[in-house]
Image 1 (cartoon, chains in turn purple, brown):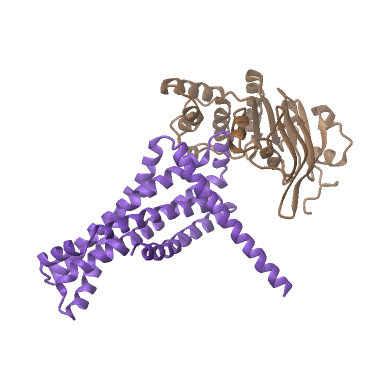
Image 2 (image 1 turned 180 degrees about the horizontal axis):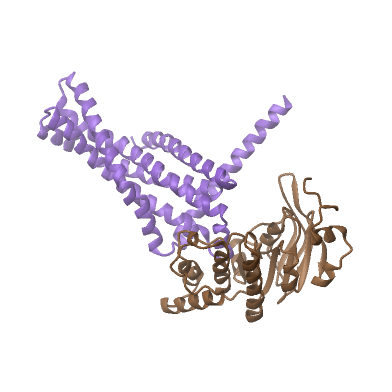
Length: 256
Length: 249
């Protein structure tokens, strides 16, 4: 019994220490991003990596998400004779929930894993130590630009996701299944409010912070060797994805 | 001068440095030798504040660095250059960008001045034509020389060499040693060299310290260490399998 209690105590302490270290990490990253953001080219490079290079996968997933929403929505709404509301159903689903969440999950899979692996490899090959020995701040080059870039890129990617998804729903609902195009966009314009849009933007900004925070942290404190980097990358992707879904619930409950 | 007093460091249950005392004299080349896995690199990382001791103090030119914050520590690190075991070049940057990096980030020199300094530094280490190559296109010896060029560029007062010749053939190994000796003569920095290269390391060192089981068990001039009566030192220098150093503990 004492052994079990001791184990639970040790696990709790380890968990709390890890959480404390993670919060210190993100606070210090914000501090560095504000105090010495460095050359804009570092942020621009990350914007291209996180944002521009994720756009293809975002467009692809958004198109098919919109199309499946159009399909499912049409057959459900037809039962109630209200297929004219298809545009509203597609737009609200995308703008409020699916756009921010799915775009963040896509970025986690594509860019988050790469961020974690890149920083992890720099750690095990002593490149981070090299920066420190030059009296340079590693956060300025490795963490802050990625944090700023993901905070800016995620809302933009989410906007692309929403627009492409709405057109995907239009393609299936209007062009394939014969919903009135005027009703599709007209009802959407009437029902979608600014509150829906900015709640999606707020979510995207938060998810951008979560992805860069967790992926940078896991890479920065990676274990030894290739196995350590591989474990850090997997943990970063799983943890980011889970955190995005958990955080989505809490933000939604506050913003609704 | 770098001074370590009663420094202890452990990883888990393994004590790597055990109340270790060591003084590195200014302007000299000090070699730290000893069997593999005895914590020589750990000792080097304490000197530049990459690791902090659990107990004891590390002093650089009279300033105690083990309790310093980031800003104060970075001020002390301005005095240092370091050549890592695997050179630790930034693999996404070219050789030119690697060597130029500290100048671009820490000085207000123009691009032309930086380019000139980088070329000078690369020519000091005998690598004039590799500027556009990436680290993975270079051999192990070339990487080390680029690392040395980067370390020399900011004209540091102290350079730490973490096994600068590991994994290199004997000719390149000798060339790197000569380069350390030559650049030390030219720039007059304090050098701390962690090495296994016996007996070559005695040719370039002014002082030698032997690390074994977390302590400095012998130190002095190369002649004094080579003439030591300590059985561990004698076995390590001779490379004999018989003696107190066990391969498996």
